[in-house]
Length: 152
Image (cartoon, rainbow, N blue to C red):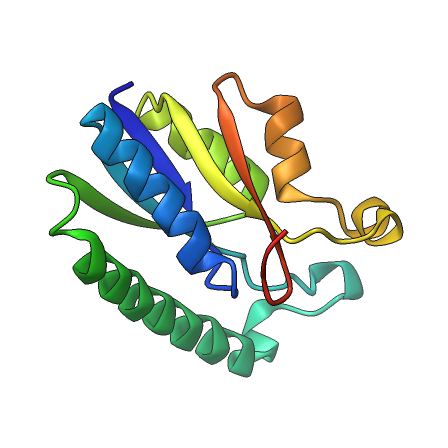
């Protein structure tokens, strides 16, 4: 195992998921890729509007990008003493497909991410990145079970 991706969503599960990824990277001497996916700004073209008619959306997205990058740098600083090869990546897109694409790009051997333990109805309506990765990934996926307030 040479390359491990830790998919971070900056939720309360982040420390637990990060710790699992760091421990795996240390155990295998693997490089660690800290990945955050910034969901794309909404498209209003279906309603007959152009993106320029909603400049606030662009400002919001740029602010979200800046904050996500700062958070990723903070997390990087917290793990560089534990793992020798740590990289960060901030990508745009739908989380499931962005993670799958990045895994192919870096020829990852493992993806680590958290599961928030949403109920059945929420999973059906909203989908689940963790469930999607387990079904669609062509590489091992470690889902760290996390519920509100900590580990399951």
